[in-house]
Structures are given as C-alpha cells and as structure tokens.
Image 1 (cartoon, protein in one colour):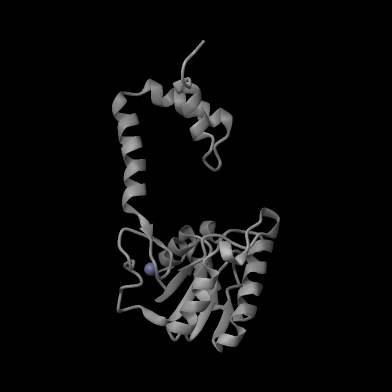
Image 2 (cartoon, helix red, strand yellow):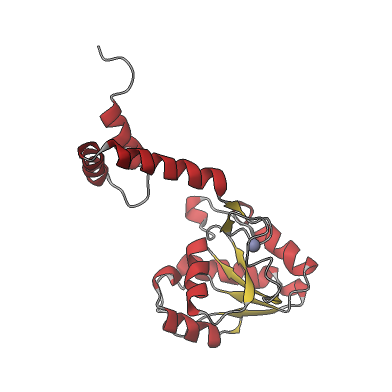
Length: 199
Ligand SMILES: [Zn+2]
C-alpha cells in the first residue's frame, strides 16, 4: 500500500488544473520537468511563489501590480477623467501596446456570465460605479470583448452608469465580432478605440 500521494500523479493533477492544460499536456510537462536538471524545477516553483507573494491587485483599478496604486493610476501624466473598462489585465496590456491611450483603466476581473454564475458582485462592478461617482470621470469606454458575454456586460454597465451622468462609449469598429481583445493586433485595437460610439 503506497503512503501519501504519488508525486508524479500529484504534479500531473496540479498542472492539469491550469487553463488550457489537459491531462495529456500535464503528463508531458511532468516528464519533461523530470528529465531536466533540478534547477529547472527549482526556478519554476520559485517563480510561481514569487509572483504570488509580490504581485497584488491595485486597489483603484484592479490591475495586477507590484505597487498599490499601480504605475498607471499613480502616473500624473494620465488623463484621470477617462476610464477604459476591460475584462482582464491581458486586455489592458493589449490596449497599452497601441501606445495611443492616455486615460486610466478599470479591470473587471471577468465578465458577466449567468450560466457560470458570474454576477455583478463577482466582478469589480460596484467598485467601478463608486469610482465613477468619486473621481469625476468624464467618459467611460467599455472595452469588454465583442462576444455575447462581453456585449451583455457592456449593456449592463451602460445601464448601471446612466444615473452617473457620464459619457459611456463602446469600442466597436475593427474588432471582429466573437474575437478577443487580448489577441487583437495593435492597429485594429487603435481603430476600435478611435471609432468608439455612445452606447
Ligand atoms: Zn491601478
């Protein structure tokens, strides 16, 4: 009778909890790690520990950062009256790569998905409404993904922001319907930002 978990089975199980990693890939990664010098496993696990220990959510925009507030929120050169709402930090990074946006962000940390039980309270939506009221925001750009759930999230936010008397726009042009902002090239994204419309 074996005592404790089999370490190989255990690593396969842990790796297959990651998004996009199935059982087969987890198995391949596990045997790859075992075939490499111990140094690889050590730096991998140290990097995972370090990212968890040092990176946190900015308490203002909920982007991931080593500082709170994050460098974007604390940059006085940024237009603090312009707020771009995105689902994830990777969307923020994609928009930053255009180099054409000089406002601040609000990262929802997901999108509304009733089927998966994701409600407004599970996202940073209450914090967004609070922030718009508090920080004298002039325009909110809704840059959620152009798919069913991203659109539903944008419609919900536009409605929730109605009483805040703020201009609400939605990026539209250029980003193909059903696609993800994260994977959209910088030129297309720049056009989508420039072509935003009132929602
Ligand atoms: Zn921030």
